[in-house]
Every structure is written in structure tokens, then in C-alpha cells.
Image 1 (cartoon, rainbow, N blue to C red):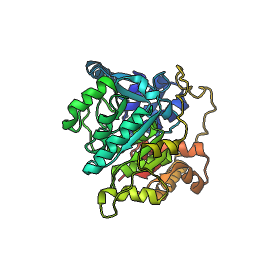
Image 2 (image 1 turned 135 degrees about the vertical axis):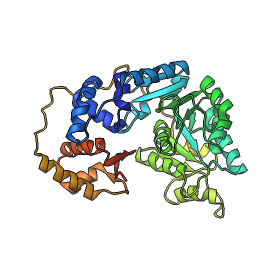
Image 3 (image 1 turned 90 degrees about the horizontal axis):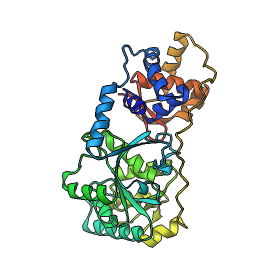
Image 4 (image 1 turned 45 degrees about the vertical axis):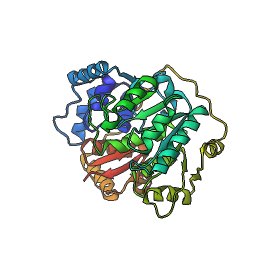
Length: 363
């Protein structure tokens, strides 16, 4: 309950969640400190997420037959644990053992061609028979074909809305099949209708769960290319199926191959590129170890010096993402001090964190 309340509190995302846990030791302590942290950032009358709303979310998940798992619990996917913005909590429906099996993502265009759909189905079927779980996003086109072809061997659908919300509606029967024999995963509350901002968050989980991401068809500015970039940031392999230069649906894949992605003609190319299949890593039943509660407290600084640092930070970032470690170098300030001030700016709504440790100025 405390983890859920902290994560759902206003302006607290996964990265801020982990930072607060590290600084305060427990979710209960972090919740108690949030109003003071927000006040220091200039946010008045800040209240953490209410207990009754968290209880309502838990009840909605129970009615949907979903299970909530937390980072550090045995079924939590080991592949996500090293990500700085790993979801602290995941709603799930289905076979949880799939979360710690060797997984590959097969993704691509919603408006996929007939050839692209057949390629996605063939790849997913053969990869599934070779012992891989196939992950995708339950979208139209390539995602749909990938899930269908991998149902028998195991498939994971990472959705942008609640695990009980079908999107697109035409995949209702497929989603029910996956919940029965595969696994549906979301970090969003049950009942949530997906919006545009939820899909990049969803995509980082697809790539994070996977040893590699295979892109079948994708436009030059598609969500599939965003997922591919996230995969590279996460240290995953990116592979792509080439297409005709005149087909806009193949332009993204061709760009990936030009920039170094492995060219895929069939499942054998994927298996050869990855080498021997990695066995699932041992699972730990312990929760993530918080930072010791008796760490030395940071020195108190004058409001004027804090405001000056905030102005310098905001002067270096804009709508284009900037990495936190790059900010630390540019500002020549200790990482801990920068982290504290970024938390204040985030709670104040002046900056937004993106997957991969990137920061942008809020419009």
C-alpha cells in the first residue's frame, strides 16, 4: 500500500520513487517526507496520494483478476532490475513464470503490409519454438501477428492502459487468450484508458524485458524506432528486417540497418546474432535494499544559492532531452547535490524525466 501511494503521488515517477526510497529508507518514511520536500521546492499544500484511492486501485485489480508485483519480489523480471527507471510496481494477468524466461521483442508498424504481417508471424513462431518468449505491445499489425504466432510457446503483451482495458478493441479476444495462456503486463492502474503519453513508457518495458528487439516494419518516425533507441540505451540488441526503399513502412528498418542493426532474413539470423540462449538468472525473494537510514544529512544551503542553482539547471535544458550525468559535468556540481535539486524541480513541475535518465524542461 505504501509503495503504491508513493508511486501514484503527484509528480513522482519511477526514478523519483527510487531516489526517495534511497534517501528515506522506506516508502512510509518517504510519504511522510514528501510534503516537506515539495514545500522546499516551492509547492504548497502538497498531499501524497490518498490511502482510499490506493485501496480502490487494489480492489479494482482484484476484481480484474490481476496481481500486483513489486521490484524485488520473486516473480519481478530480473531483466528490468538494472534499469534506472524500472517500474517499481507491475500489474499482471496470466503466467508470471514468463517474466523470467529468455525473451525477445518483435515489434513493428500498425499499418503493416501483408508481407510484413507474414514475416512477423513466421519469425515469432520460429523464435517461440526455439525456446524464446515473444514480447510485444498488442497494437494492430505486427504486434498482433507476433502475439498470435507465439501464443502456444508463451507471449507477453505489455499494454499502455490498465491490464483490464483492451486497446485496440479489435484485439479483445486476443488479449483474453494472452491473459489465459500468456501474460498481460502494465504499470498503469486498472481501468486506465491509454493516452499518447503512456506509449513511450510502455515501450521501455517491452525493450527492457527483452534480450533483443526485432523490428519488422517501421516508418522513419515511428514508435517502433523509439523502442529501438530505448533498447540500445538499455544495452539490448537491435535487429531489423530490411524492406524495399520505396516502401515508407520499411524506411525505419533500413535506417536501423544502415546504422548498425543486424539484418534479419529469418529466425536463424536472430538466433545466430544472439549466440547461446541465456538461462534465466536466479531470482531473489528479498526486496531491494534501501539506503541506510543513518546516512549523513546533506548540508543546508541558503534559499538564494538554491534558486541560483535552479536557474543554472533550467538554463541548460530545454525541450531536447539532456542526460543527468551531462548536467553534472556542465554545472561542475556533485551528483548528489544535482540529484536533490532535480527532485525539487521535478516536484515543482518545471522538469520531466524521460526513460534512459534523460531530462527535459516542462513546457
